[in-house]
Length: 116
Length: 108
Image 1 (tube, rainbow over the protein chains, first blue to last red):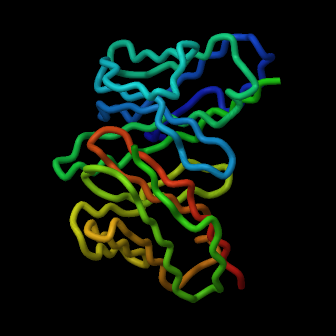
Image 2 (cartoon, rainbow over the protein chains, first blue to last red; image 1 turned 90 degrees about the vertical axis):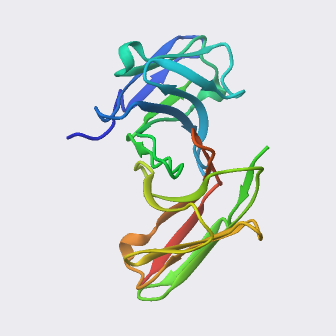
Image 3 (cartoon, each protein chain N blue to C red; image 1 turned 60 degrees about the vertical axis):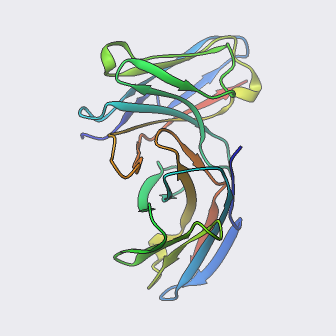
């Protein structure tokens, strides 16, 4: 399978614990995105990497959230001191730059986080 | 800021045609995209309009009018498997900003 892979698929954690999610993008894609999606809503942008550089972060991304993409390959998203409001589906997507500005993003299946 | 509005739900019968509208308020963007998401699944790309007008991809067509801040997705010859959520999204070259989605239910 050469699509975007995310692990784990599900994570249940107690409030206050730290969690880390991993995303393996499509290998030739230099752009990687993290989104968060809650029930009945569209994905909300969290952060964007071009190769290993984190070029954009949403104001939604509090200081408890950190993302890395060492060597421009896989990426990790860590949430420290989780809160119940962090419960959501965390989606990773990757893409290549298109001259038309078409950011056709290929999404992974997501990691569903439940904070209890 | 950017906001996109879509109807929350649409119901149609198999074989019919349905149009899902998207109105937006945003300043400067490259184009309008449409994504499909089945329950429990990942969003998948359907269509992109960089320019005003109609883009056709098989049973799906998408339209954009920048002067009206409006776009739509047209689904023809509806099939049961088209039951899903559909999101419009604007591209500013980097990340996408999504609408809240339209849940399409196709009935036999």
